[in-house]
Image (tube, rainbow, N blue to C red; front, side, top):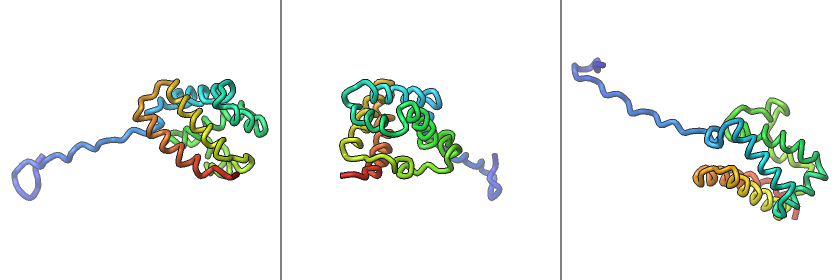
Length: 145
């Protein structure tokens, strides 16, 4: 390739480094589905998830939450915006307005998600990125005490 201003060959631009979406790093649709299933298995069966399990039983139930968390996380992590397509928004405060979330529930959610990420075997750098994003959102959701 020749530069039009002289006869010296033009330099090729440096390659663009593509940043992978968290959606892809987690494993796409299958990876998110697996993460959500492991998370809710923890919520339903482990002592760390007890407070969350009770909250879900008072609300729409765990089965409903498994579906909607998958839909939300798909878009939240950069994939198809399934929750938005279904409900017209992805406002986490609106999603949780019917739930009283105190520091204990917030922290339990984060702990259970951390456990789920470990159990599905994601690398520590991916876990760090996920937990940074999850913590930011969880801090916004505390609406009691």
